[in-house]
Length: 166
Image (cartoon, rainbow, N blue to C red; front, side, top):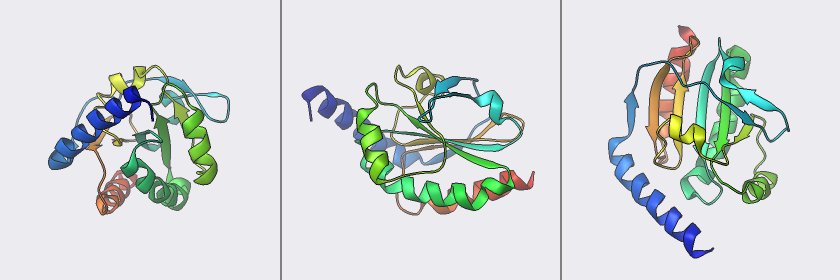
């Protein structure tokens, strides 16, 4: 790992530790719109997903908690996608080669978008890895999670179910 990647990883891990003390928060307001290239080769915009409950998960291949969380997110996507839920992974790395390699070993069926220039990460004030944003069917941000620790998926599931019932 290069020195700059190590410094970046250390800084984000520090933010993760601090943010894990904060946990999830309830947020209000309209989710900022965006369009990003997807792993499939097309562009995906948040506008295309309006009317669905959307879970945006900002992640990086070098992030240990992201690696732990990803298979759990895949299970949630498979379980609830037929009910109007969609999981969207947003990779934050400038060079997507590491993410592509990691996804070959840990495949997912949900869309993975690439935020190479961190424009969307800045719109959503992402300052910890992973960061997860729940958006309701009307396009409003409802919940924000900074960081991940085992067991957080229970809270994710409760929030998905609650938003799907609305």
